[in-house]
Length: 234
Image (cartoon, rainbow, N blue to C red):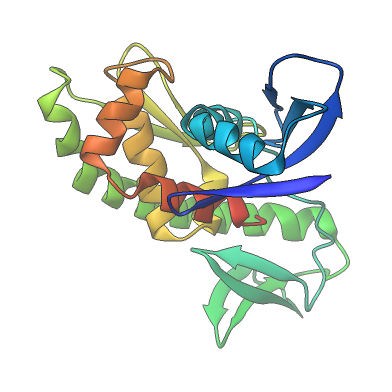
């Protein structure tokens, strides 16, 4: 059966099953789904009470698995198809033209291309446009947020970005922050959250309690922003 609990601003949904066991068991899977296995005689109230006690751990596990959350569903690159840019939906409008270009206007991403049936050319042109916009916004946000790390990191962090299949971002031991270019499709607030998240990894290269304590200190509304990012279909 399906059930859920409230944890702060977050609703935790879980699949509940009863089994021949003495204690409650909770599993969080890579797709962020939660399974709860409870002794057969357990009441729903008692189960919810125990799940609430483990809510912090569940959210931390889901946040960890967010790094491996699948991102982009298959696109057809046809006129009328919706694509995201900075959290807003725009429709593609394809135009046949000798000059290649991508322009945002009137709720549309207007793409001029020689052959509107050449999906690979359209995809390549759109990805190039996304990358150009990402460079602009990522660098600006990174420069604004970088000072956060001065309180816990001695060196100067640097920023890189590329297309990634399984992560929103990452941080290495050399102080380099890597962002997924897919983030340009999300609201600026979500890009900000990922940057701060990775900056905190400059001190803790893990998802320990200490890491989340630091994240909570420098970015108190991280949970709500993370939830917003998770809900996006980019």
